[in-house]
Length: 196
Image (cartoon, rainbow, N blue to C red; front, side):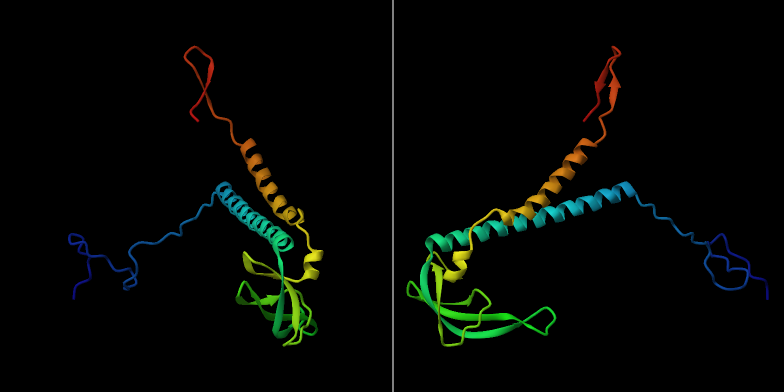
């Protein structure tokens, strides 16, 4: 038998010295470099988008809430709601009651609607409750007592206003801290603004 010799002419790899078929080359661990400035910009961008979306959603909810209150107060008509069922609601700990969720049916413009009765009071099935509904939006149901206590106000806009103000403030700060454009000297020696 002759000793093993690599056939370099045909490109056959040489086994390692221990006689095994180990890797021909060693792999070196690559390093991953993170651009902290770019990562910070991405995080700030994601936060600004989240704040903007939250502020817009809350703003729309506040507008809808005020619109519903105004519709019920100015265009609502009295309806008689027949209670169909009532279920008890559990509190956060599950050990105490948090009120009741009741459903009922009522007729408006010749059509019968089934809707949740606003409030947490218990109503025995089969009894009737006075309600207020809007002819143009019959699924919008309330009670005279709730309508008397509710008024359209600006308070639902405080939180979304603050969120959107924070977004605008951060954007203004970023705009003011942007680097100044480089100025290249003109042929006559005066400084001119570089490309924007």
